[in-house]
Image (cartoon, rainbow, N blue to C red; front, top):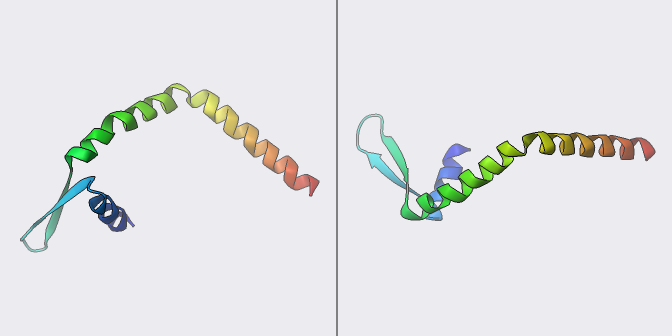
Length: 74
């Protein structure tokens, strides 16, 4: 699965792959310039989630209870 994801990221030019000709072959991945531009917004989203984790967890519990209630009503 990870290989598939890395290949997709490579196709999108977010990562670059370098294969070293050793036995066994070794592939190294690095962020491209475009990939590095994604780091800041992803970190901002992560920080937002961490700062609001308690509220998000309560909301998740609310959704779970609502779903269970809806299933019981069917």
